[in-house]
Amino acid sequence: MQTTLGRVHSDRRPPGGRREQTWRWLHSVGCLVTLACSLFAAPCTSDAQPAAKVHRIGLLSVGSPLARRPNVEAFQQGLRDLGYVEGQNMVIEYRYAEGKVERLPELVAELVQLQVAVILAMSIPDAVAAKRVTTTIPIVLGAGADPVATGLVTSLARPGGNVTGLSDAGVDVMAQRVALLAELLPTLSRVAVLWDPTNPVDAFRLREAQAAAEQGGRTVQAVAVSGPADVERAFAEMVREGTQAFVAVGGPVFFAHRTQLAALALRFQMAGMFSAEAYAEAGGLMSYGTLLPAMYRRAATYVHKILHGATPTDLPVERAMDFELVINLKTAQALGITMPPSLLFQANKVIK
Image 1 (cartoon, rainbow, N blue to C red):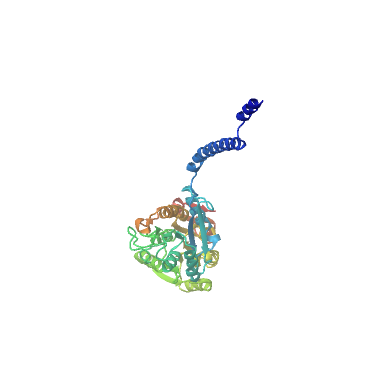
Image 2: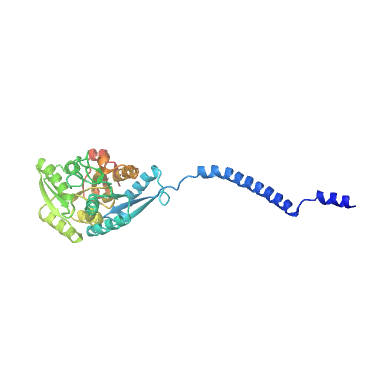
């Protein structure tokens, strides 16, 4: 009996030994589970992509959102073509001066404060204002006259600062406008040039027009228009001097009052040449100028290159290649003007 009891006792495991064995088994299983999880998780971690960088772009315009909409939309489309999605990998900070040039410096300061990577300047006045505030943030000129003459760049091939972009520099646009007016009115002997002394581009354009008109033996009348109060005065001055036709240089003042300009030209029976299609659509007789949406779409490529490390010094200023002539045939009829077939043939668009 004693032997039996002893045998039975010797076959039993210590109570603590069984718990330890169970703990070791659970620990081993836990290690295997942890290892399996890490093996499965590793591919997910290695395949994860870093969050896309969000580029902040400033857009500066002395005009209004409505006036600039077609060109802004062209710029946006250019960015989309390059893979940018607003709100995902880029953000555009829009700043419009609503025709008030004096507001541009404070708007540029806001963009600088927001630390934008690049500024799209919609026009020469915008670029001039931006460069006065910052010499470090790259500035892309969307469209404009001669950036060399206005001091924005050292040369078209080597901009030499923080400004580059697109321009119709080297293209005698004003001479072509005068020539088109002369083709319309063969007896034209006196032409007025409406210009804005506050716009740094207009003095350059005025000289172009004067040279072209005088070369053709015509007298040039320079008429300053700096605000809405000057518009009617300008027409009274032209009528008093016996002017037969006029060329409006362009710019914020003229664009803002394009409907009034067209109405006064009709009232005083005066042929007018303007700088862009929007003037002809507002009732102006003719317009000739760069195809602006194409330029702003192209400007997106400059912004793209700068966002990827290029500097304005690396990017020569590109000259405009596309120009358009728009004729408002309805206005011509109201003015009693018969449009020559040669002009209608040259027109990119005829408004009837």
